[in-house]
Amino acid sequence: MDSYRFLLDLAIILLCTKLLGLATKRVQMPQVVGALLAGLLLGPAGLGILSKTDFITRVAELGVIVLMFSAGLETDIKELKKTGVSSFVIALLGVLVPIVGGFGVSYFFNRPGMIESDAGGSLMLQNIFVGVILTATSVSITVETLKELGKLKTHSGNAILGAAIIDDILGIVALTVVTSMADDSVNITFVLLKIVAFFVFAGVVGFLFYKMFKLWTAKSERGLHRHVIIAFSFCLIMAYISEHFFGVADITGAYIAGLIISNTERSEFVQSKFDTLSYLLLSPVFFASIGLDVQIPKMSTKIVAFTIILVIVAILTKVLGCGLGAKLCGYKPYQYRRIGVGMISRGEVALIVASKGAALGMLGSIFMGPIVIVVVITTIITPILLKPVFKRGPEAYVTKEESVSEYHEKVHDMRKENN
Image (cartoon, rainbow, N blue to C red; front, side, top):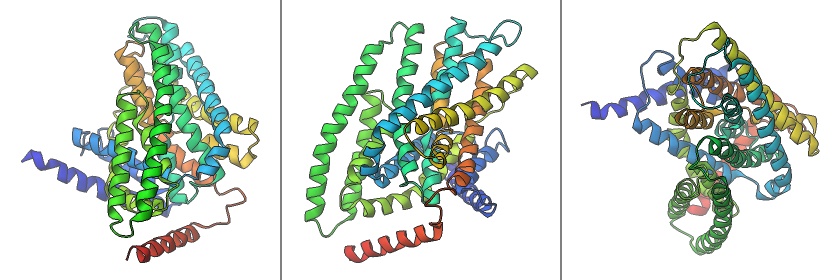
């Protein structure tokens, strides 16, 4: 009968994420914070009621793919084009500054007499790798928070999305460079060519799909649900191809798929259906799964000190690096504060990078605990900090109630059109 346990797990996750989401909303925090706390409370770091299963892992992966696809659907392409160069500068500094910061902290602690690492190989490479871990950005947390606040389509929101996508690419390059020094089987030239090939592929396929989807939907007055199925299939195919064939994160493929469809007439209808799918099942499982991953190990005084400093450096390097990039590109003070805060979260991306380093012997097991804590704190603190920084700015007078009413008007119009 244990084969049906996943049904109970799902029910517990959905109920707890919603209840804690409402609780955090009451204290003026985004509901996503409650979902993250639910995972921590239910998982090994809390009450130990649930553990990460293969089913939860798969649903969570689908959840983040749908979340990024929805973000692509909501992205203003014209605005994204305007922020293209700026996003690259923001992402570049958002990678370089954390690498330097992480390297500095690791260089101080990872040596004889301080913390004895059980990883083999060069201490220098180990220290650089800690910096590489800090370059990761998990934009899914930021996307959900901005959607909840109704700020995803702002100038700052588009800059964060663009920078996060480029950040993923630069992070892959940094990871490849460092691992190639420790693993002769990794060819950095080949990896870079695959990344370039992916964007060429995405451009060609995206253009063809856009033309076909636009022509098809223009001729179809009924059966709009088939448009949603085709759009979802395209999202999943792009996510699979990007990860499997090109080594680019699946969420990047999903985001590009959403971006392609966003400029068609049916994008708002498609978006409304995915919003329902996301909040009903996929998003709660994804955010709770982050907490279920957390296991807090026993740590010595030196490890505790290393953890505290690493957390502070992880937060400051993203805020300062990305904020400085935004400032250099002419953004206003309230905007570069938003962008810097929006890039703080490391999420599951940092854990994947860390596990890769551990497998190659570039990260000692003693450092996994601090890395997990960095991921947890940066993930939870990002939505908490985003709300106050987005309250300042010329568009701050637009209330969430107004955004919600506008959304319901659009849905009402689409339903009338569908009928």
